[in-house]
Length: 206
Image (tube, rainbow, N blue to C red; front, side):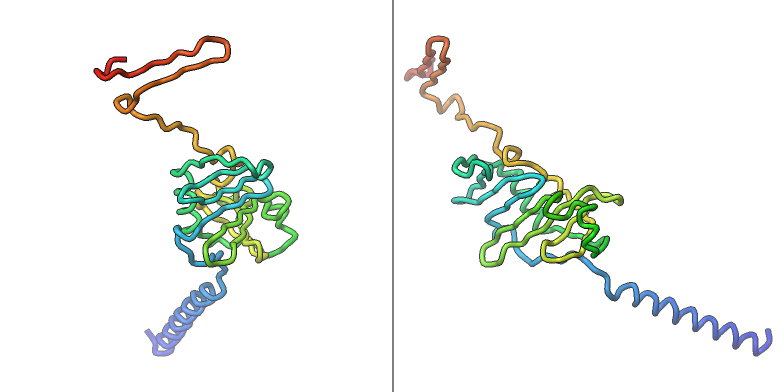
């Protein structure tokens, strides 16, 4: 192979390496991500939902309560397992897929205050964090936007679906019942029939 040919091949090889090295850096610089404030699960004391679904979830005396904003005087115990999963999901919420920062597309993606699900996360010692959860994304997951930003992202976090409920959807549905061994009596009543009362005697006979 001629010396001139070797020089040409070497030159193009160097140019190719330089191109890919530069291209990789250009892609890495300026990538937008939804970055939420760093907070731990124990710092979240409230979650308020507005818009598409409405509910107020409040941590009181170590227990989560579900409140219908339309009936603020009535509080119901929330499903602790469900709330624990939601809090964990909010702490680890990630959205790396940038979609747009054009405000005219917010309504289309349902991340505005009219169509979107507004989520306010109340924490101890920090200002509340507000986000909007929109419709399902074409690539999977759902669109999400921080209230103070115009940038819209897509997230595959399951918490966006767990939050799409009204207050009744967060309520504890099961009833805590004592074991038979701990019962000393049982009363069953109905408006249309007589009351039935059962009593456990000293010999454990009913």
